[in-house]
Image (cartoon, rainbow over all chains, first blue to last red; front, side, top):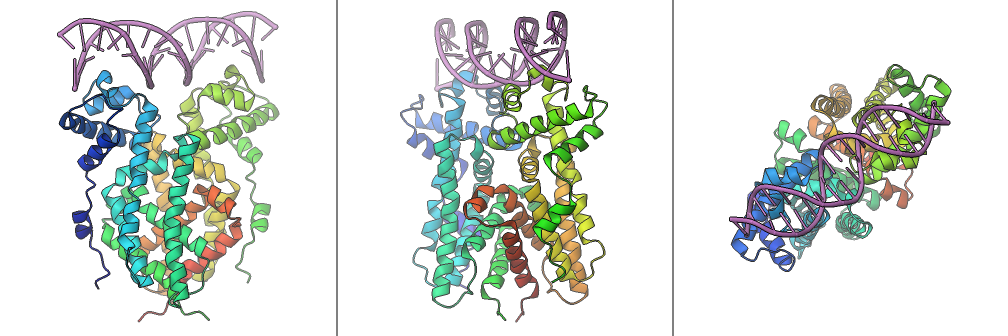
Length: 232
Length: 232
DNA sequence: GTCTATACCAGGATAGAC
DNA sequence: GTCTATCCTGGTATAGAC
């Protein structure tokens, strides 16, 4: 099956480690960040974002005090403020990154023809992406409500964007006669919810020792059963 | 179809309005609450919980200050503290209620024999329940992380409890030979995630004008397709 | 039973030494 | 570039008048 994407392969060609992310954040915010040596800045940003994600994902961004953050990151309060000018700015920096990454999804299905293969690929890519960046995805989901109105709207659009990709694939499959006629909006919505479950309930899948590849294979089966079932 | 439960019917025999909930909370906490006239107490609890759910569901429980709450509920700070003795106690009072309600689910499938009917009923009942108590379910999901360790554990058990119900139905169906052999843990997990999506993404389903009955019918179809598909 | 006034502290943010 | 010391707002909580 050449439409099958392995997790290891995927990890090989995306550069999304904590350091990759922090370097990108640094470059995007060169003017605002007071530290000018890239090496120093990236090293500290890694500490800051690791600490920030870990703390806010366990107790909530709002409940995380900057003193907590300072202790966990091993930097003083003063040092923190050379990387962002307010707690809210920190929130936006984190939120922003996870949104940007979505474009990777689109790349993954470019040039594919077969709707079955395309559906499978988008499910795999979404899960693999959220596996590599679990903390970022979890944060983005849980802290949406804390965003300012405009940013909040953008987050909602990001969710609908993924659904749109799914719906387009279903439409194509319908036109080519390989999928059933179904309510595509609802189908897209529930697929999305099952994709999200993977990064929202890691405690559950970890405990049960379900790998991301297994979950992906299951999900593809599950969805295909509905899309190609023989109808009476 | 006599296994079909209408939303209106369901609403008729559950008593879960805001006033019902607050009366129950009052009775459960008679000693702690300083106000002794039931009529007065329930009236104010309605105001308090309405305000608390609305505020915390839009900005997060932690971000909601008691000054906010006081203004929204139309009661002074002093008055608030006659109903609970700390913000944390308020959190627990809210969290506790939504857990208790779960037992209604079990009642709903008692005495049913056919696995198909049972599955349908549990999906409908779960969705209807979360429809009537949307704010409570949303709160319980989003604020789990703020709970003390022990309470947090209880919340997780509640999630696994619902899955257990689903898994038991699948087992029964498997034994009776009416369902396929599937990975029941994974299937239970994704059904749960789709049930949760209904109360977590109300903005989406409202916007698309999807009724709870329509969503329920869709979900039943979707799941059945997987459980009874002809296998090669 | 309810309010106002106030105590007290934690949190975000910054100035200035090193 | 980083730290310590400090400012001050806004949060939780309570005392005591009505």
